[in-house]
Every structure is written in structure tokens, then in C-alpha cells.
Image: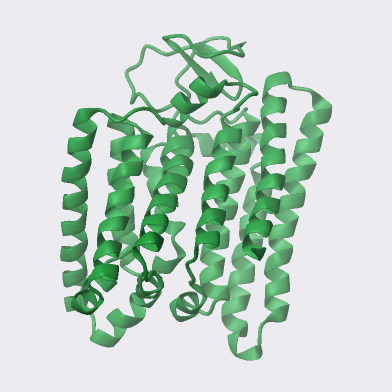
Length: 371
């Protein structure tokens, strides 16, 4: 219950800042902008301070790893603070997709009409330049996009720092524990902020919000592609794991897959396997493919997704997860986020179902598939 309460508190704070960012984009009031900047600086300070407190709390044997973790959090906080500088955002925008609109924007509060597109509460006619249907592009002048970038930087910093603060993969494996409350907390954190971020009840109504996040019905072709893609991804995992295991010693392979194996072993019922697969698929796809990919693009979102999985940090598995992220991004681009959720769910659930149903038979193979 403690983790659920903590998550609700974090989501409340981040959600409040997200609402404020939307309001600033809509009204451009100087006082609100100053308040937003102060709020973001406060979050950055808390993240940097948490690294220092973690460093002070560890035992001397873990001091080196803790120092690296604290340094990573400090660097993340510095980068997130620099993002508040317009020149820095303009420089970063050179490496991100350009906005899909041209001309003078105008404010619009209702569902979009055909040929119109939204950016941080600002709308304009879509550019005639052909581009992927889900891509909106990054606007360095949007505080919603700025805040999204800050969250991404902080999340990446926290994930990598967690690896070192835990003492490496063995420590991560010890800390991994799956239960229904943990899964619910993860779903709340991943799903709510994106809905608030795209302006639910502020810049968009329900229908427009679902459309912006790509949460639309799955087509018949989407079902077919999903099944084929899941089969292909699972075959990729099996092949990748076999090659990986053949290239390194048994001890090294066991160490590198310790965290992911611990995650799989913690799931001991079909209900828990279903809940893990569903919450991960829904939460992560809404956050990454639904909210972030239209802003940051196909490649950057895949990179962020790969490094957000701490159980694969600094192992060859990161490459595999990057490939999986590319596949999910492709589904989002050519179909929608709902289809990506289905692919993600089946990709997670099928191996977990085998582990729970046939633990002895799958102990040497499926347990080491990368969850």
C-alpha cells in the first residue's frame, strides 16, 4: 500500500505541473510561466538531492556504485535545468522532428477538424509536406513539450542511477518484486500523466484526447499484423538469446540475465502474469507510443524505451529491447497505439504463461527470455 500512496503523491505533483504547463501554453501569462519554471526547478532539485541522500545512506562497500548513481542523478538534474533555457531547447530541436504546421497558429478548444493539428494548445493548418500520420513534431516554444523533455531526462537518469544505487544487476534482481499493488502503481504513473499532458479537458475533449494518443479501434488487418509480429518477435528473442548464450560464458550469461529471470520467477500465477503483461502494455504504450512518439519521433522514443528498462541495463538485452521498441513504434505509425498495446501484451503474456504453466520445462529457456 505504501508504494501505491507514494505513486499517487508523485502523480499528483507531476500532474499539477503538467496542467500548469498546458495553461501556460494556452494563455502565455508571465506569472504562470514563472510559477512553472519554479516548479520544474524544485523537481530538479529534489532529484539531485535524492541522489545525495542515497549516497549518504549506503554502506562503505557500495560507496563506489552509489557515487556513480548520485552523479548520474545530478547530471540529469543539470540537463533538465538547462532545458529551461530557450537556446538549449532550440538546439535540441535540431535533432528532433520539426513541427508539422506552418504559418501563424491560432487557439482552438474543441475537437480538431480534418486537416488541423494541435501543439500545446495552439493549432494551425497542417503542412503539405508528406510525413507519418502520427508525427506532430517537437516545439521548443511549447512548455508542454519542454516539460515532457524534462520528464524524459529525469526518468532516464533515475533508471540508470537505480542500476548503480542497487549495486548492479544482482541488486536490481534482489529489489524486483511483482504484486498487484506494484503493477497498479506502475499503470497509474504511466497512464495518467500522458492524458493530462495532451490536455484532457483543457485543450482537448475525450474524443480528441483518445485520437491524439492513438487509442482508436484495432482494424482487422491490425489483428493479423499483431499476431504475425508477436510470433516474429518471440522467434527473435529465442534466436538472440541462443546467440548471446553461445558467445559468453555460462556464468556471464547467468549474471546478465539475473534481473530479468528474477522478474519472471516472481510471477507464479496466471492472474499475476496477465496483470503484469496488461499493465506493462497499456501503461508503457500510452506513455511511449501514444504520448512521446508523436513529439520526439520514432528513433528517440525507441531509445528512451530501451533504457527505461533497468533490468536490462548495460547488457546485450538493451539491443533486443531497442529492436522491440522499433517494432512497436512501427505499429503505432502504421496502425495506432491500441494495436501496439495488443502486440506488447501478447509479447509479454505468452512467455509468462509458459513459465507459470510449465515451470520445469521452461526453466532453462523461457525464463531467460527477456521480459
